[in-house]
Amino acid sequence: MKKKCMSALLVVFALMLVACQGNATSSVVVSKLFGATSQSNSAIELYNNSDEAEDLSDYTIQVYTNGATEVSKTIELSGTIEANDYFVITGSSASNQDVIAASDFEYADGSLPFNGNDAIRLVKRDTVIDSIGTIGLDVNFSYQLTLIRLGEKEDYQPAPEYYAYNYIYYVPDAFKFLKNDNHEIKTLDDLYAGPQLEQRFYDYPFADAANDTVGAGGVVSVTLSSIADGDTATFSFSSSSVRYFYINTPEVDGGYVQAEPWGYVASMYNKQYLLNDASNKELYIQSIPGYSLHETNGRNLGLVWVNGALSQFLIVSEGLTEDVGSTYGSYDYILTYKDVPYLTFMRFAEERARVNGWGVHGYPANPEGEKSPDWNYQGDSNATHSPVWTPHLDLPWA
Image (cartoon, rainbow, N blue to C red; front, side, top):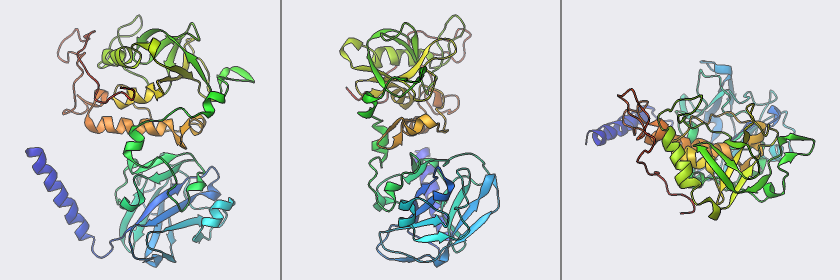
């Protein structure tokens, strides 16, 4: 009851804040942000989520560069954004023909003044309508990425306070999505379903033809030999174990490591849920394009696909791994499903686990989150090797 009352008070408080903003309500939102591989082609797309046209002469784009806390650049907009329509802002130095053709407003001073680590705000008169990026924070949140607003376009709502998970992180230079909603991954349900292995990867070689120690992104069909823990197993294609790329699950007791909370749960999940009855499952290992096939200790590195589902994504979804991070490498632009990097799917899955307090995102970081059933938080002998635990989410093949 306390929680419900508190939630109601927060809603009322939020409505009061909106009311205090006065006469600058808006149905215009930032629908896409194109952090292009060439800054000259970067663009901002707006969408008018109403049945009436909106005069943009009251609007500005404010840019806070390199962690600045004061406005670095202001772009005074002009023109009209029609009802239920798009409006694209570009730089005068744009060279991509799709960007040039889509442009409704051209920033006269060359490239748009942001490069992936600069906060951007859409302002109507003196009121912040929409924000992307955190003012005062100098991190690459949109560097060489296309950010597309989460949800169906008719449901878009501006957000004066930036929340990273209001946007889906697509590959860079996805200009084919300018002024349309043809992108296929739109909703949380789409993201929570996880990536699938596209047909092209079956045609890629596993190792680079010019350097057989480097991955090329292809897959090999394998059978299971043994399972070490939550992120390591051995498969038939190699005598060395495979370390699951992208993730790091908590440790179990070993020759050089001691068990950590959730270590035996992660191991249990891999053994009893993902790779149980492995002879009746379709298993593939995928290499990482342009990345070493091996760790320094000789273990292989790869992505583990079980019955068409990415193990790494499923493990992240249960909250059983350290943070996957938010930095996209060159391989992330290749390891994609429907133009969305695997990493994007994992980031959203991780955020759901964090919000729910699942796994490593629970106690003690979240006092109301779950405690590890394999751990005695008060004792000296902490690890329980046979925890009682069931997954929060159904397996895709269940």
